[in-house]
Image (spheres, helix red, strand yellow):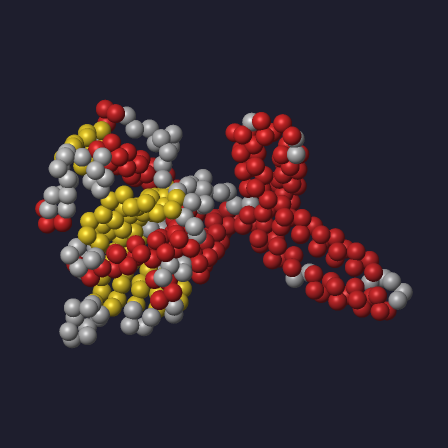
Length: 355
């Protein structure tokens, strides 16, 4: 591990020297590339340097244990006792930082929320979840753009698709995919009975054109007139777009914009991301097939979380975590949940590396 860390530090210093060259600003593309590579290595190099300083301090203090002055010996011993526990913590941090990076982590995402079992109550909770993710995005200074939605008369969302763009969005939200269950008393429930509903969430890395090869001959594009809830016309021109990817049967409909061109661009963005997700899931299924006996299936469709309103708690079933701060979570304060999930899956990845 330490040989690898030395190589990384050398690379970091080379990039630093390159950034110090005055002519680098003449080539903005090169400057961006070198700056990003330098920033990407910054965290691990800083932790490694801290590890080396503490290790050296410990060695220096060990030499002072032989000093004829008893006070100096005592001070050295106290220093060693204080510094030594820090090394295992830094080593654990370095192991995590050395894990292979998910190439999708830097990407923006397409968020899809769909009401499942529970009728209107599921749609209302779908709207609550969308608001939760929107608040979380605002807290992180990310941009949310709604791409299409289907509402209910009671203010619920049967389905919503949105793009979220910003710094490392996928890395923070990728563990949200799955079935989210809600337990609460609906506003229309006169007997005060708790109802259970479910909503599915899909988080897909937003695919660039270079990520997915889509041939024109594999697409069927239909144009039709957009309509609102209950068949109410919202457009007098044929601007709504339905794109079918014939080989996979994937269908994307976009009708929120008045421009056919804009609807098609949005539909293609969603289609690319769904195709990229299919490729990722296929690769993951192949990897899981070889590992199932050791680490389980990790099926994305499993119920991942329950939001219990009467008890004010939220439970993530994958990591056996329960928080009694449901109100804060629904206001978009997801940091505690996300940190716990990231820590859990990083630990799983470290275990797999050790197998």
